[in-house]
Image (tube, rainbow, N blue to C red; front, side, top):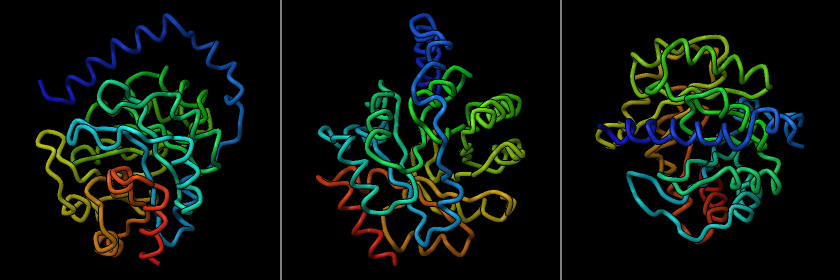
Length: 260
């Protein structure tokens, strides 16, 4: 069983429990449920840098990244740095995140917020809307074409944008559909956790121009972004590079300044 298999198995148990504790009707009564969402897609198309800054405490590939981050301060710092959007990890067991992180980020910034999660159920999409997200992540590696269609359609009905993450050509080909807004190429091999920017380069020509292209994982230098921009990438998801510092917002600001 791979790490991804274990995560999905645990996620199924987690969702079953949550459904018993907090029914969908209760989520739909959230004060945030009817707020107007902010478009990451539009921000990326208008941005000179395209940085999506991530908030995460740890990951299976690196273990602890930052044990002491204040999501409230990090969100404000990222906004001051003028990033295009913010990604918030909400998985608890493997990434040390929670939906409270999403709520706190929402309370302190006006950035488009991505709920970064292993989404395998409609319930999680309604959760995302109720906790202030503007878009969701769908991971092609763990979903069928039918599930991608179903989940993305539900997201669109809730005015949430959809970022579809792929790791190879097979995942990309099954996932291209009108209800997807952005396609993210993850440079990390989920089986070996090795990272290579060649993945983004190889898949770039296969992504139709209708979709905003985002490169994810292994982007830690200005040179990496300059290397990928000629391949049509408008968004760059950066997490560990900022989060491993004492002041992620300041790190993001310095990084963006060096890009311009």
